[in-house]
Structure formats: structure tokens, C-alpha cells
Length: 270
Image 1 (cartoon, rainbow, N blue to C red):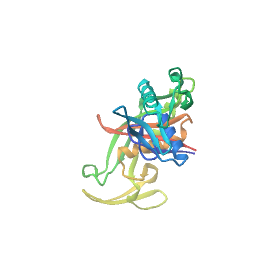
Image 2 (cartoon, rainbow, N blue to C red):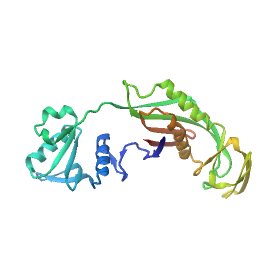
Image 3 (cartoon, helix red, strand yellow):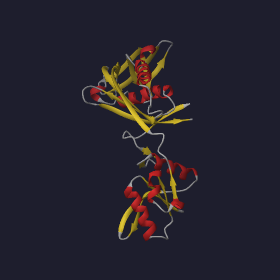
Image 4 (cartoon, one colour):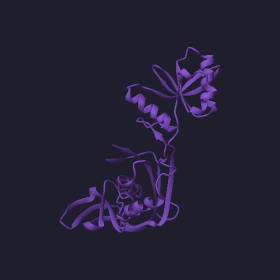
């Protein structure tokens, strides 16, 4: 089963404590330390030769540095030279192997398969809908929008391809069509229902509203009918339909000119 976990809208690799990390390798180390029950401090300040440098991880058992560039490599070599009593290991790409003699304390990794992303924006990725936001005075009456959608997919590429554009377009169109010409409302305003209708009632800034709406054109949300929440609903619909190599999805919905919402979700697969 595939379920989405909503992440920070500025997509990064995020550990269980909500710390933004710089790379997939750092996140993998954090996950392994957590699995082993090891507490860690991220971006630990370490003094060497009168200067303060940042080490990626500090644990009770020692330091861990991820070597992503030549500056990291030089920092590691200086610590080994000037502070030989410091217990430190490094994780780095094989291209740094020829530059290091301390191979005993280096773990090399290969970046293949490569992470990539695609984005799709198409005139057919648009839908019409009505909603009410009882908590916002201007939007507390029934009104509608036509919203355009852009979708970004992130994951591991296979044969230099993440997802075929044709396949992705079909999946996205089907998801958006499911929401087209629907009335969106927070489920908490539902007072009762029968076989064919929902009965919606709430008191807002514009007065008391009592609505009887057809079930087949109404979409009840777990939360207010904001454009952010609609982005989340599209993600929920898309996730089960995406191939397994897709690891994150971003959905942009434009509500009018030059405004809208962007929600990013990491896909937790089990």
C-alpha cells in the first residue's frame, strides 16, 4: 500500500525530527542511526586549528562526515591530521578514493541510480469547482473557480527515465477529472445525509447557511476547502497510481492569476 506523508513545501530530505538535510546520503545515515537507537546532533560545531567547522553528525561514539565536495574532503583530512585523537569516519563517493590514504575509515557509495524529476503543466490539467470557506469572510459564500494544475514527480531514474510523459499525463488527467465540477466543503459542516443528498449547515460571517446538495457532485474534505487542501487531495488520488520508483510528488494549484498553493509529499511505500 502507498500512502503520502505531507512534507515541508520546500522539498528537502527531512529526518524524523523535522531537520532539513542536504542530501539523500545524510538522510540515510540519520535513518540508520535512528534504527540503531543512536542519538545524533546534526551539523555539529567542531573547533580545529582555531576555526569552527560543521561536522554532519555527532554521536556518543564519534563523528560522521559526508564528503560531497572537495571542501568536505579537505576538512576531513585536516581533522585527521590536526586532531588525531578525534574518532571520525567519512562517507564519500568513489571519485574521492584516489585523494585519500585513510581508506580504513572511509565508506564509499555510488550515486547510481540517479535521482531525477519531471514536471508537467498542460491545458487539460484544469478543473472547475465550487467551495465555501466559512472561516474567511470574503469566501464564506458559495463561489467557484477554474484552477490550473502543475505536477512534479521526483524519484529514481531507470535507463535515464523517471516516468514516461504520456503515462504520467494520463494518470494526472484521470485524477483531476475526478475532482472536476465538484462542490468542496469541510466534512465537519455535515449535519445529516440520506441516500442521495448531504445536508450542510453552518453559521458564518455572512449569516446562517443551510444547504441540501447532491452526493454525486459533492466532495467532503477532512478540513477546510482551501486550495492547499485540494492540492493534498490530488496527491492522495495520484499516489496509488504512480510507479514505485517515484519517491515524492509536488502539486501546484493556481487559484486565479499568479497565486495558488504548492504541496509536496514524500511517498512512504510498504
